[in-house]
Length: 422
Ligand code: GDP
Ligand code: IMO
Ligand code: MG
Image (cartoon, rainbow, N blue to C red; front, side):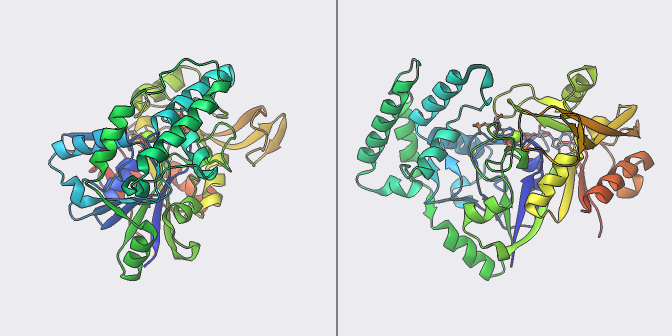
């Protein structure tokens, strides 16, 4: 069996949580492969609304095994709160969740470093979620980090204190006020709480499942345009958000990758700083924000909004070898007379169909316009009932990207999903 992957093709918040929850009906194993509690993955079914930060979005499906993979960074405090909230809904979380021993731990001082580093950048700040993501991945690649498997070591506290001391020394370079013991007791209590969960050798467990023909869905966080290598550096997150990240973060060979589901919104959003060529700072952008309820699931920040950007979308598809597309939130466009799509860029005045290296380049999008469908899509359950103008929009995207749109999501609920026949 091959490993199927779900990943975001834009700047995050494409609707990965909803789709993983939908697909988890047919996948007995779901594994998060990177990122940490910077993610906010929203799920809606019946009267239940839930935002997951670290736990895979298969957790609400019976008989699933959910794995927090080695490529993830985990904050014990946030993890414990999330588990307790899930348990309140009657989900036997300890039975359904396993954590890789190689998952790195976010310390309270990682979060302080994140805050100090962002504050020192002033206007050029990244717009980080301030969850300690960057500093934790820095310690991982710098070979200083603490991992989930270390929790069981007899000298865990000594190692925690040694890393904390290093962090305090590092913080001397910043003019930043902080309490070095902030959240420490709560963090150590949460570490004790974590001991109730099964810590696994994730790479063995996942490869054994594949050998036994068990279907596994890998769940990405963030989006391709926030990738540490291929996103708009430095306005990115600190992990590999493209498909290769699933191999790295779960310990699965590239030859074992099967379907690659690329998720995109029918328009674009971005939270935090950095280039956004199709951004709309006008009433149309505001209408997108209000209709799409574009406010961060983790930080509550208003998301920046704009038209669909095919140059960025094709780039993301190329990076990950996307085999099928999943289009989200087209219902948000129901009221628009005209819908625009960027099919090219003018980069510093020159026409281009490439995402430029220069993050600070002036980009003017070249648009193609479509007539809006002006109908409520949110209650449509069958493909044949979708309006002609909407299908024209979908077909155009398929022709341009050369990838079929296999799933169309028309509302936040599980049920508001059309899976197209082959
Ligand atoms: P994720 O980080 O990729 O999981 O996405 P988020 O959960 O951060 O943001 C997606 C938001 O859109 C959430 O509030 C979802 O409930 C909502 N959503 C998902 N799919 C749809 C859809 O097809 N239509 C509408 N209107 N909302 C959707
Ligand atoms: P999900 O999984 C949207 C953005 C932040 C910031 C940059 C770096 O819900 O799609 P970090 O906290 O990683 O140092 O922030 O990345 N960012 C996200 N934007 N969705 C996310 O996750 C994000 N995770 C990080 O806003 O610009
Ligand atoms: Mg999100």
